[in-house]
Image 1 (spheres, rainbow, N blue to C red):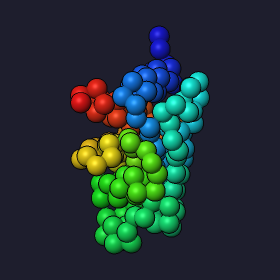
Image 2 (image 1 turned 60 degrees about the vertical axis):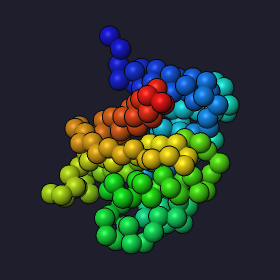
Image 3 (image 1 turned 45 degrees about the vertical axis):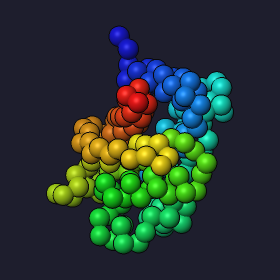
Image 4 (image 1 turned 60 degrees about the horizontal axis):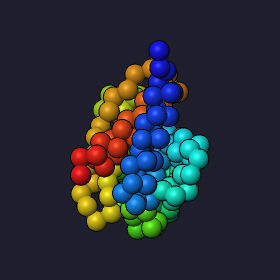
Length: 166
């Protein structure tokens, strides 16, 4: 039986093959996953042909500095919000030469959750440069590692689905 780790690695390989086939380069803007997406993608031999870079912006200050997320977005909506992952995605395209992007922010736990934003809530944005950004909110279960792994899996699948639909 295939483990979630094996399934995620397979999705990463499929995503890399799709990016290569389309001649696209990917960049990631990661918060709660702490660079796990980039690590998984760069584990794949030949990923330098389609992977550009990762910006791990864990703090709000890093989101503002490296991804140009406006203060107002963070103040009005918080770091874990649709507005923030959209702004992260826009900043990713502003600050890199990537054609495709994944942006992710969430509450992995065990602390940090609230009634409005419980532990396990993760927002993901995927998109292509100069095209509409697709966002999705997830509510994952489990401990910190499980939430982060599920978030990585969902982000990879969301971008793969977008690339395969168009």
